[in-house]
Image (cartoon, rainbow over all chains, first blue to last red; front, top):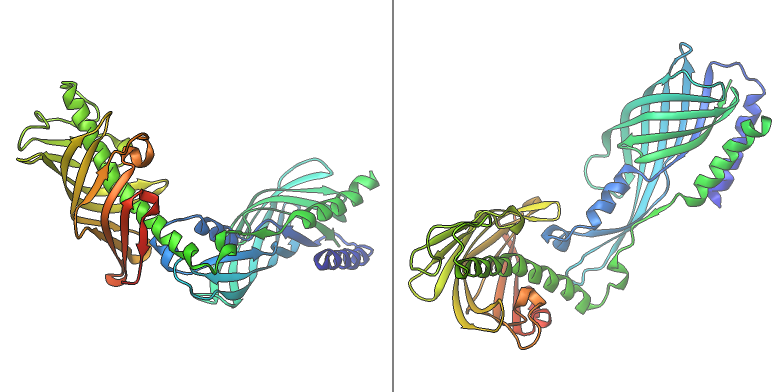
Length: 189
Length: 226
């Protein structure tokens, strides 16, 4: 419910911006599929060996990946910009063997990735694109390893649909941020 | 057309927010019961014994079956004489057996030595595995299977992240074909004896476990932290 309210407010705020539409700047808000790290965690939990028996296991929940994207049109077919992502994995760690108590954890993941987007010729209301982004991932909360890691996000195919000022987006995504895809809305001004 | 332009993004957001939340549910929700934790350890150890010992016995019995039928050619084994004759060595060549390369050597008495040094595959995982078993044939029960007395000379499996285990038997394990079913544990539904397992992480002993078979394989008594 909280997520839906936030998105609605964002939508209204961006709607106000739309009134001053100029055309070269664009802001997009996305909700993505499950985070890549959560996906890896899921694969891990299905294994059955000594490591999974003697090392702590994870019972986790994941928020979707939220993405705020800004891009500037250098050329009609070329955009550069920056994407910011956020997701949260929370849950508890426990042991399969031995009666050790479980511990709760929350891991926040922030991403900042400069990006290049290429528009592909399409229909006026269906505009395909591809995008590549690379940057950093910053972890806070409970985690192992380095707080800062390299991150990348590949969008081999995305579609903008709707008008030039307000449009919807759907894209396939792969990388260290999102596995699967994203849906969102965008505003051009 | 305006409907198309402005409503679709809203529909997309509503749809994605309705369905997008991930969870990993696993059996930890029943945690807190000590027998549950023991069950995991017993299950792993039983599985490991199954992989190493019963798969090896299965290959030996298959070799005896091929030999009894007088088969001079088999795609499953590299054969060199009669496998019931002293000193004869056969090698498993079938990849699907998961023990490709295992050697079966006939000893002077009614026993064989089974040795393997290679990768044992389970699903998409491969575990570097080594074992050497001395197996003594006992009474031939009805059907395909024999009764066996298994003495582990050495047995080790290496797993990921520095973990490995070694198995041993203080006294030989007995694999017996029970009355009635010949299906469980690939035919040996009565097992007796004690199997020990030492668990290592990066070469350091982290656990010592015991599985005492009392006739029914999956009722074996499991103890850890010895």
